[in-house]
Length: 531
Image (cartoon, rainbow, N blue to C red; front, side, top):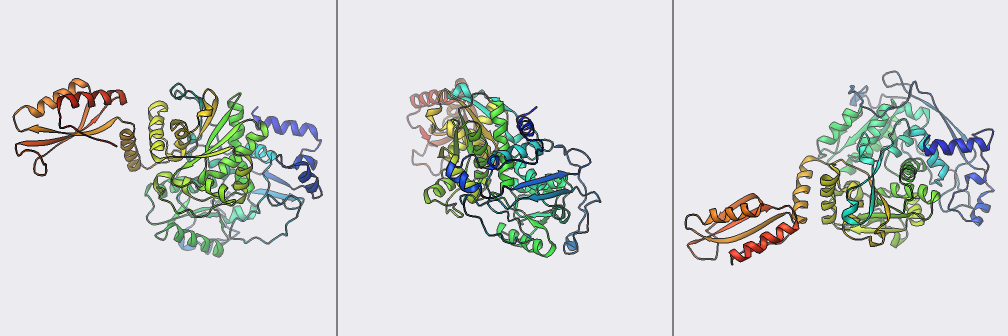
């Protein structure tokens, strides 16, 4: 029996009716006594959901099937239509009043009528009960990923445990929040369908799990999106529409289609259901790593994952240190904490193609306030450290991880957390979606940053055998020659000399230093190109 099942079983023993819970149990676990006494005057909300599925949701391969709705019929798709005739529905029953806004525990909020075309869940407290319920509900659709001891522990002096969230079907941790969000939709909305507008991991998770739940799903992507992303979403079962030249154009088009056809426009936000689904990872980490001292998670655009996981871990053990890491070129969460509100736009030179969702301001008030309350430390790392961290994953873990998944290890590699020496630390590997051309560039750059690919130039005479002697020296040192070129016209040396440039690969920094010393003794004109 996993942790979530044990928790729900213990709650069922406390009350004869598991649906009825006292007001005290619904108080947020981080509220003070004054806030609890002020908030106890309101009726606690309770949401009952019954899944009427023919069988469990499986996290397996979804066979390709043709889209049931043609693009020209988007306006004709109404509430009475079904996807392949077998829509899975949920009966939702709301008992009690709407939940209070996060941060306004004593003052009730005026109810507002939500727009039917956009997911506008009011900000709400995320309780430990919500996270446990989410873990119980999604356990059939999202696999429990391993959290294993890493061979990198000996190299950095920290007991490292890697939470391998990149092993999900879409190679992203966002499946947790997406699945719980989709299963929380009303029955009529599931019949109408959902629509998203991005090429992020969130869109791929929505495409996969909406198709598994037989919910019509549409994905709008810009025309300049990498070809592999639309192909992947189509294979998951979504209808993909290419529109506009920028992501903003795709978002406007998706919102217009949602208004005209009644679809639910989904965007990555910080609703209580989404945060609770992401927080289920914290339950697994606490169960899999005994005597855990600290956890390292990505921040920035992944602030929802950071906040949800911190909410779960801090309730289970307040002594666990929660650390967020984000790129130095785009410190979204650091700036938000400094200013006191979530930063929506940050002008920076961060590489969006490399960092992905890390530099996307996708967190709101709920995630920000949770992070401000529960996260112990937020640090930044350089791009060079992230690239070398990706290389370490390939060498030691035999895993191809993108920048989002490798940024946690980059903090250890860069020496930004010396206080964790000798402690038990869990690092979240949240994503592994990287394009092949970008992967080649990152590996080549990381090898140069790690001092294992080097370039140098020497002046040689035009006499026969001079170049052969240089190559023989490289062979004796055991280095690998990657490239060699001769330059004569644009050199400033004697007319009878030629400049030879070589790119070589070594085993490690020690061999690189030895090669440089040997070349310096042999050639006085050595020019070593620093990275």
